[in-house]
Length: 132
Image (cartoon, rainbow, N blue to C red; front, side):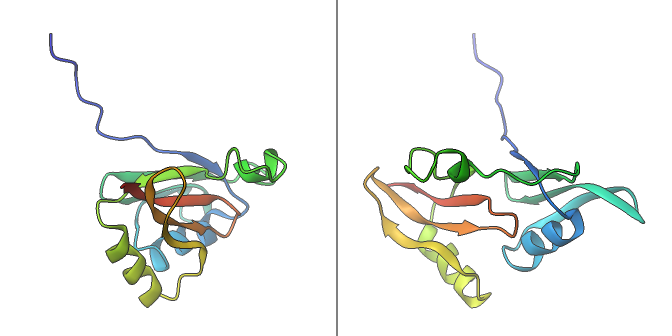
């Protein structure tokens, strides 16, 4: 029996300001805003997407808690999302052209991954990369 395919997964981030978070992902990281609302003058939920990667975000009136802040800087949980990228070098070059600041630069890490980290405006750390 063949298993049904799962096309992707979307992290759900608690953010301080949904319109600002959506703008960061759109303008800095090249994502498309696929939903914002529920109303034009009351945007507290949003979704961005780029390729198969999707991120949902919502303002619920509490501060965001990125993983690295919970792990007391031991480095056991450094990322909030891993985004598989077949060519991290090309994506890093694109982000550099958009003046995106890297949290950690493009490199081969100790886990045999090639990629880089970006921190969003709410402190969430995204790893863009692939296995070496």
